[in-house]
Image (cartoon, rainbow, N blue to C red; front, side, top):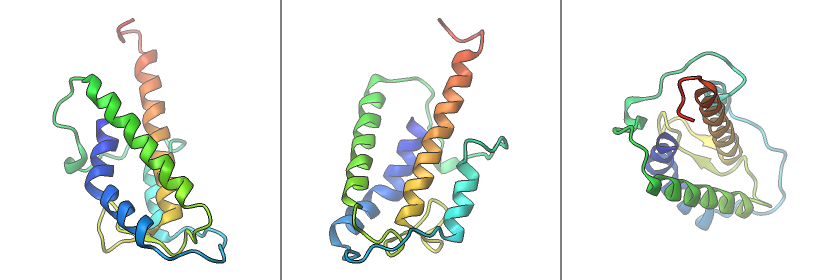
Amino acid sequence: MKHLLIIYQSRYQAQLQKKMTTNHAHGRQKNYRSTWVGRLLMGFVNPQKKRKIPTLKSFTPSESAYDMRLQTEYWAYLQELQNYIAQADGLDLNKIKLGTSLSDWLPMNLGDYFQVEAYHHRLHLEQAKRVMQNPQFPQ
């Protein structure tokens, strides 16, 4: 959870706040088309791919102890994300561009961002399931 929060807070939160409140991509909604950068990032976090991709050091949590405040912060993050998805209804997802976790010079569109987020969360949910199925996991 902390890893997902770090990425969101350091790379996407401010961009989304700005783009979703100031963007004028209303009007005729076109079919969403993924960018090559979006497809690349989706490939990294696709839960159906079984290869391991190490995270960037800047996105790695410093502590491993679980804190209940983290859960509260994570749920607030999911609520914020859900609100952005609702706000995006009727927007041209191809027009709104966000810098990526790799670089501001490698933008993806808003539709890509939502898909990458969904894949990334699913990836970590699958990891958590595997950890909990381990016989060594505390019951």
